Image 1 (tube, rainbow, N blue to C red):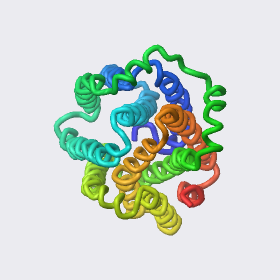
Image 2 (image 1 turned 90 degrees about the vertical axis):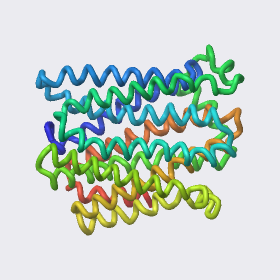
Image 3 (image 1 turned 45 degrees about the vertical axis):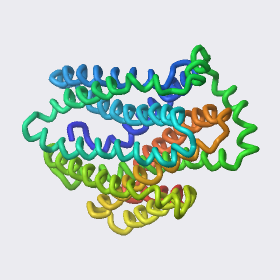
Image 4 (image 1 turned 180 degrees about the horizontal axis):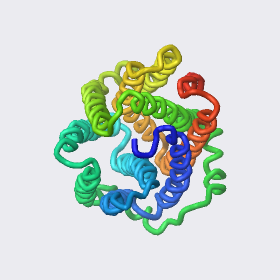
Length: 353
C-alpha cells in the first residue's frame, strides 16, 4: 500500500537475486557450521534487524518498504532451509514419516495464533509497532533453539566441525554420478525446481487482486490476518490425517495433489480474475503445501543413503531452489511488462502440468 503493488514483480526479481546469493552462502556452510547454530544465529539476527527497521520508519525512506518485504521473504526461506536440514539430521526415515507431520502441525499452530492476533494487535497498536512484536517472538524462538545441539548425533557433531565449503563446479562434479544412478534424485530435482517457478506467479496474482479489493492498510491487514489464520487452521486439521493419507496412497501419490490443484487454480484465474478465485487459489495451495507437500517432500530425503543425503540436500535445497526462484521471478517480471496479471496463469498451467 505504501509503495505500490505494481512493483511486486520487480521486487520479487530482486528478492530472487538476494535469495540466490544468501542461500549460496548458507549452503556452503552446511558442513562448516552446525545447523542448530545457524538456526540460532539467523533467528537472533532477524530479531535485532526488525528493531533497527522500526527505528528507520520515521525517516520516511521509501525504499524501506521493499527492503522489509525482501527481508521478510528471506527470513521465511532461510528458516525453512536451515530448520528442515536440522530435522533431517535429527530423525531417521521411519521417525520422519511419523514426526514431520507433527512438527508441521506445531508450525501451523503458531501461524494460526500469529495471524489471528495480528488484526487484534493492529486495533490497539499502530501498524509500525508490529515490527517490535515480530522481533520479540523471533527472539524467543532463538532462545528456544539453543538446546537443539545436544540432540544431534555425536557422529554428526564430530564430522561437521571444521569442514570447508566447496565451489559450485566441484559440487556439480560430485553430484553428477548420483543423477545418472538414482531416479529418486532426478525426481527430487524436479520437486525442488518446478514449485519455485509456480509460486511467484500465484503469489503476485493473489496480491494484485487483494490490493485491488481493499482500499486501506487496516482492511488489508485484517483480510490477510484472518485469511492466513483460517488457511493454517484448515491445514492443521488436514495435517492430523496425513499419517493415514500417506499410509493409504503413499508419498508419491500424495505429492500429486498439490500440482493437480494448481492446474484447477490457474484455469480458474483465466476464467474469473477476482477475489473469489484468488482466495480459493491461495487458500488451497497454502493448505496442500503446508499439510501434505512439505512433510512428504522432506520425508523423501530420508530415503537417500546417508553418505549422499547431505550433498543432495544442500544442492537441491540450495542451488536448484535458487535457480528456480531466480528463473520464476525473472519470467514474472518480464511477462508482467507485456501482459495483464490474469494471463500469467498460462505459465502456471504449463509448470503445474
